[in-house]
Length: 51
Ligand SMILES: [Zn+2]
Image (cartoon, rainbow, N blue to C red):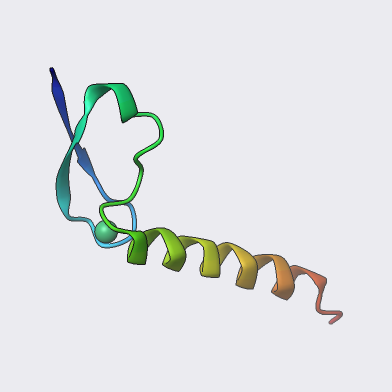
């Protein structure tokens, strides 16, 4: 089975995933996944705040 080396967009750390889950695996850990979701939510909320 092949492995692919990827770089986590949250913490910048390199990690290795199975090639068949390459497209799904974006973050190195669940913590980074939830961090990215939290940031997305924050961006969404801030875009609704009236100036
Ligand atoms: Zn990470």
